[in-house]
Length: 562
Image (cartoon, rainbow, N blue to C red; front, top):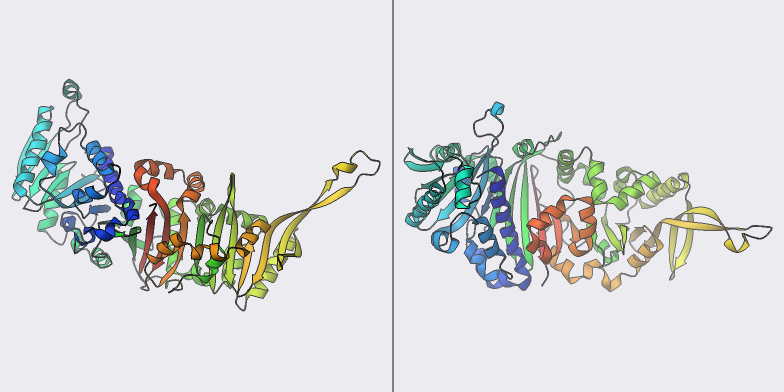
């Protein structure tokens, strides 16, 4: 397997996992026994993987268990695609022996650790077997077919395990057989539990060494053991990442490296799919952000039509929390600065910052000690959405608003007040003079004063509401029963997130898709790979939770259309 072919398998396997979620919209998981297939929720194949490996991904359910839940034959199509041009028939050659685990791992960044001859990562695939004899027959069958296609086979005994491998098949031989070019492959049946495949026999030898010298494999890593404790027992899939090595592999150079390991698990839910994760720090981190045990009340002013909503508590402490440390590490790896990433994800708020000359942290976040909610509202064909920002009042609110008024005034804006349906509104406006067209041809021309609203504010009960326009603040004031907090889909999404938590980010996929694709072009590529998943995706909700320093836990809940 080359890097390209391995990642084809890896990507397809991950997509297969995500396809599990598309069935949740029909409530099938509530009726199925999927969540009882793997009681431990952990990978048995981790004993083959080095504790230094960059990444390991494991599917902990037999794909045939999912066959009854697919709607459009997605799984069958994936099997056909993966085995195309191999001469292997899944139903006849693999299904009879395949067990409840499929693990794929990048074992090392360079197999021979020699940078002078180029970098060749090591790839390992471990398939659980329920019938060792049949799986051994499969290995022999696979390599015999490769030999018929022109491969040069070799076998050896290594520490009691028979290894079989070949060299790259000559292109001329393949052309005669009408088969696409294949690359070197190594395979082995290990004991009665697993069949291994790799892109080089060195990878298989290392995997066998890892089993026999237990201090070398992933299960002996204290970080992995700590991470594995966070896994839910009903996990259908898990992934473990060595973040510094992954960064090196992807040629990223993060200046900040607070967290060095991450584990991810997928859990089925009657309403969708919950991906839970835990980041493990090298040392004790900042304390977690404020914890919430009930929905954020400020969301009552965010209309259900919002494409994106962010809600939580105590923005003043966010900069000194574990979330801030994670954000700093992520943005440092992905971009030259935090502002670059933020401007892509929340362009309307960055526009306000530049236009008003404000600093969100110093002028806004530092005085928001209670609840807050931010909502983005689609504006038809316009690319930039409207925004609403709701904050719970505190002792520092009057002084903070006064400071905002001064900043607006120093920027040339005027403060005007008026009533909107008996609610007093304050608006920051930019005044300009325009020639009155009706008097343009007379001896004495007249001008009309025009006011462009750049922001509006309303004092409502225990909250202050800020918005990008009069229309946006009117939408907030009239949300009432049609608010996001009363929306059934939103309620189902946050119900899947463990409590207490540190708030959430809610994204309505249909309303946000175009905006996100413009800001993050890589999404289009991901959508092509996971078309069935994204076609049925309704929303995703991101949250963080837990109170341990040194361990940041979070989750993403994917909700699907019925």
